View 1: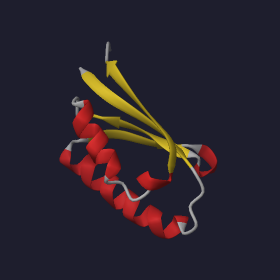
View 2 (view 1 turned 120 degrees about the vertical axis):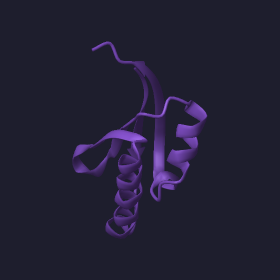
View 3 (view 1 turned 90 degrees about the vertical axis):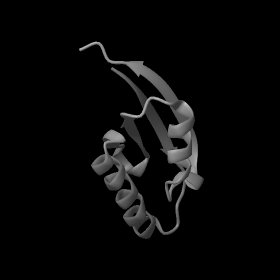
View 4 (view 1 turned 180 degrees about the vertical axis):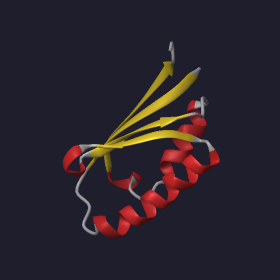
Length: 85
Protein backbone atom coordinates (compact mmCIF):
# COMPACT_ATOMS: atom_id res chain seq x y z
CA UNK A 1 0.00 0.00 0.00
CA UNK A 2 1.42 3.36 -1.01
CA UNK A 3 1.20 6.40 1.22
CA UNK A 4 2.69 9.86 1.59
CA UNK A 5 4.46 11.10 4.71
CA UNK A 6 4.74 14.83 5.32
CA UNK A 7 7.32 16.12 7.79
CA UNK A 8 6.76 19.74 8.86
CA UNK A 9 9.01 22.05 10.84
CA UNK A 10 7.15 24.84 12.57
CA UNK A 11 8.47 28.37 12.98
CA UNK A 12 7.37 30.91 15.56
CA UNK A 13 3.60 31.39 15.95
CA UNK A 14 2.30 34.23 18.11
CA UNK A 15 -1.16 32.83 18.89
CA UNK A 16 -0.32 29.13 18.78
CA UNK A 17 -3.12 27.91 21.08
CA UNK A 18 -5.79 29.60 18.98
CA UNK A 19 -4.34 28.37 15.69
CA UNK A 20 -3.95 24.80 17.02
CA UNK A 21 -7.70 24.53 17.61
CA UNK A 22 -8.31 25.07 13.91
CA UNK A 23 -5.39 22.84 12.97
CA UNK A 24 -6.65 19.87 14.97
CA UNK A 25 -10.19 20.37 13.66
CA UNK A 26 -8.93 20.07 10.08
CA UNK A 27 -6.80 16.95 10.69
CA UNK A 28 -9.62 15.32 12.69
CA UNK A 29 -11.92 15.81 9.69
CA UNK A 30 -9.29 14.30 7.37
CA UNK A 31 -8.90 11.29 9.63
CA UNK A 32 -12.67 10.86 9.84
CA UNK A 33 -12.88 10.93 6.03
CA UNK A 34 -10.06 8.38 5.73
CA UNK A 35 -7.63 10.84 4.08
CA UNK A 36 -5.17 10.90 6.99
CA UNK A 37 -3.84 7.73 8.63
CA UNK A 38 -1.72 9.22 11.43
CA UNK A 39 -0.41 12.46 12.89
CA UNK A 40 2.60 12.64 15.18
CA UNK A 41 3.30 15.93 16.93
CA UNK A 42 6.96 16.65 17.55
CA UNK A 43 8.12 17.39 21.08
CA UNK A 44 8.24 21.05 22.11
CA UNK A 45 5.85 22.09 19.33
CA UNK A 46 8.47 21.81 16.61
CA UNK A 47 6.08 20.59 13.93
CA UNK A 48 4.41 17.34 13.01
CA UNK A 49 4.63 14.25 10.84
CA UNK A 50 1.46 13.38 8.95
CA UNK A 51 0.91 10.05 7.20
CA UNK A 52 -1.72 10.21 4.47
CA UNK A 53 -3.79 7.44 2.92
CA UNK A 54 -3.99 9.71 -0.10
CA UNK A 55 -1.39 8.71 -2.71
CA UNK A 56 -1.45 11.70 -5.07
CA UNK A 57 1.32 14.16 -4.19
CA UNK A 58 -0.47 17.14 -5.73
CA UNK A 59 -3.57 16.45 -3.65
CA UNK A 60 -1.52 16.11 -0.46
CA UNK A 61 0.30 19.39 -1.14
CA UNK A 62 -3.06 21.11 -1.62
CA UNK A 63 -4.35 19.61 1.65
CA UNK A 64 -1.26 20.77 3.55
CA UNK A 65 -1.75 24.30 2.23
CA UNK A 66 -5.22 24.31 3.84
CA UNK A 67 -3.82 23.84 7.35
CA UNK A 68 -4.05 26.96 9.53
CA UNK A 69 -0.38 26.52 10.53
CA UNK A 70 0.91 25.98 6.97
CA UNK A 71 2.00 29.60 6.55
CA UNK A 72 4.22 29.13 9.63
CA UNK A 73 6.03 26.02 8.34
CA UNK A 74 9.74 26.71 7.93
CA UNK A 75 10.19 23.41 6.14
CA UNK A 76 7.86 20.83 4.59
CA UNK A 77 9.20 17.52 3.29
CA UNK A 78 7.10 15.06 1.28
CA UNK A 79 8.12 11.40 1.13
CA UNK A 80 6.39 8.77 -0.99
CA UNK A 81 6.31 5.44 0.81
CA UNK A 82 5.43 1.89 -0.18
CA UNK A 83 4.33 -0.08 2.89
CA UNK A 84 5.87 -3.55 2.90
CA UNK A 85 4.18 -5.06 5.99
